[in-house]
Image (cartoon, rainbow, N blue to C red):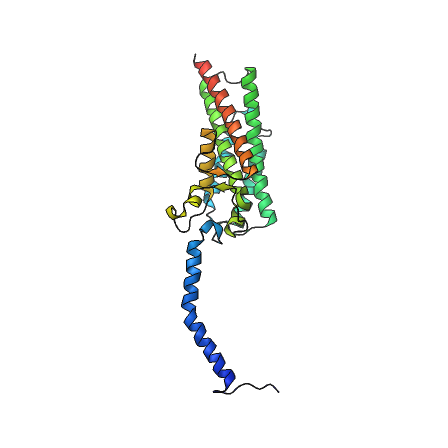
Length: 257
């Protein structure tokens, strides 16, 4: 039979002493954990997911911009891609309605397919616009031409923002779980954490800013690409943006003359 120590016996005294030591050390352990959280920036530790609505609004804006393009520049039937994009978006929102926290292989692939479809639609429109401008068959009126070019350019900004956001350190779900140590993009707050809020970490608006500045400056501004894929993606965006802006503006100026 097992023998349990009675009160006052050595085994019971040791347990009581251990309990007292743990109680005394508890505040110190809590303080050390809190200090560790403060020393380690939010983008390198496990945090809660970012709000869903910024990326959702961006996708809805990209889908809406597709309807503003002339019929000759859209993939036919015109309703097909926007309908599929909306359906995928609804599924993604249903999986994470408020914050992007739960992830799976299916969820990630659905997000990538959604971005790929928007990219394909906008790429189709941009290529046919450029071909029409080069051949002289596109852009007889400066106003509609500038509006079309602006829609394609703005969609291009949204699309690349989504790509940056989805690929940096494995995507939004992987980032909140701190699955990857090394970032693909270096934001200023990462270099100078003392100038950023305690819980700062890159979210979709930061990637939208990155995409917009890259599309307007045709080069990195304050956010630096670190990995090769990030550099190549920014290079591609700059090339598409430069080609679209130069050809559209040149044609519009020629019409005004």
